Length: 197
Image 1: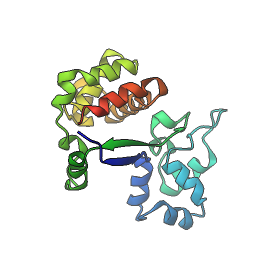
Image 2 (image 1 turned 135 degrees about the vertical axis):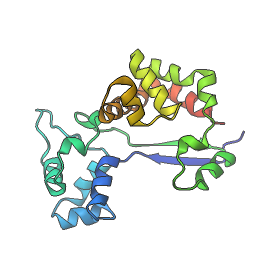
Image 3 (image 1 turned 45 degrees about the vertical axis):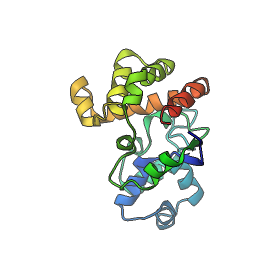
Image 4 (image 1 turned 90 degrees about the vertical axis):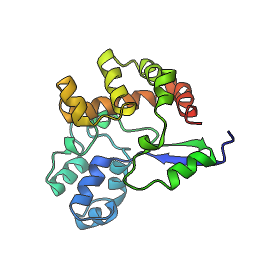
């Protein structure tokens, strides 16, 4: 199947963006202006280009100010995977076919991306297991990644099954995704994405 479209995927900090929206701001720039914060700094936090901690293990001033403005602990505004290290790259491109693009472009807002993809492609080929092995995930974390992305279980369901909090499941998920995006796993990730042809 010929790839007719190039999709630009961007990673954003959903924890921070949701907190800003919950405060009644429809974009980070308005939030920054209302609280006298650097717009560029806020955008870097939203793009996960700034870690939570400095190299000497102190919370960065901007994260502290944002947490104070939102009355939320900064640890709850930044994914754990980015506490010590920001993303070097926070976007990537994937080529998709017209059929795949139609599924993405015309799906209802409440429908998730997982619902548009035939998950049997993952389970039959064992691609999720291969990816998790490549990411050096232990047995429990491989199982959690499979339950989350293949079986479509919620954070709450997985947490109850493994006696973990929802937040801990989210942290394991974030770490797994970060490991999958590392340089040595790029070829396997491309193979994984090509399964959706």
